[in-house]
Length: 425
Image (cartoon, rainbow, N blue to C red; front, side, top):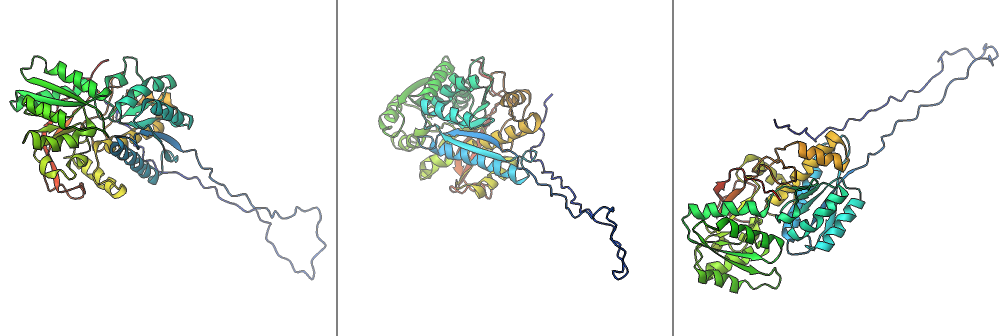
């Protein structure tokens, strides 16, 4: 039976002591006939009780580890603002048993060594949990350190299977499932559309290689021909030869899920070199792809999300987010990190701020989070246990009022998947 988390928006209860001034008996006498003072009587008490002061409680520090200077900076800004919004709202409601949430930030630079160094700095800073990791390179590098230091760590994207092992107990996926879980919905979509040839362009780093392996394994024996091109990461990437290669193959759909930073370029080039074929994205903030590409993206660009863009919960959260952030759209990255802070705060309210106790609490409970397309719960090793991806197609607007400042476009729902079978390392 699912245990629902206790609300973390707890009012601050201030206990005020009454300041009591002790007085004399207050009786007056005629000074002209007053007898000599009785020196044995107690002198009036003229002292006043010291006022009670409230000692500020130590903040609850939550670490933000994400890319704010490399190719995943747009994702990183979304994760940052999702965390900051959650902290602001919790603090405005009184914090967690009177303790304020403080977000401590580090840039992982999309680099394994830099990510590990930044992770260790956050631990030294006294955080109780760390979230926000986008890069598979960083997720894989940080994972063994998180286990060694017993620090609850949340992956937002970072779908490489290498980020989790069978012995992982402190790593938690929150949005993007492991790569082997992502290939099945792509095949399902291709089969439903009656396609015979699918081309894929993946990046030459852990996530791209993981998607490559997953696609090859999933499409094997399906009756659909698959051609995969491996392209380097930006900034020095010319996608023309890779798109031309899948065009020459005769691809009826292009899968760019394995190349998040290149998705926008692939969408634009494919319109010129192939024509009106669908392009499936890489859990990319949709405003990054649409941007100035509305003419070629609308009706062609489809992507996955862990956010339910069609639900009242997401739309209410998105309105608050857009009022708070300079971003023009709330991606599922921001939804995930908003949820991370919510869950950590709930854990602290129930079991205290010991990271080991927090990890145990997270494993023992499931969470219905604002804006999500599925209930949040985990396997013993930290894989998403109830992941249900939303697969959408960019189409003409209008969007629901107040939820999209990035353009006049919105989504068509293609698929809300059944729960995906958790990947087991």
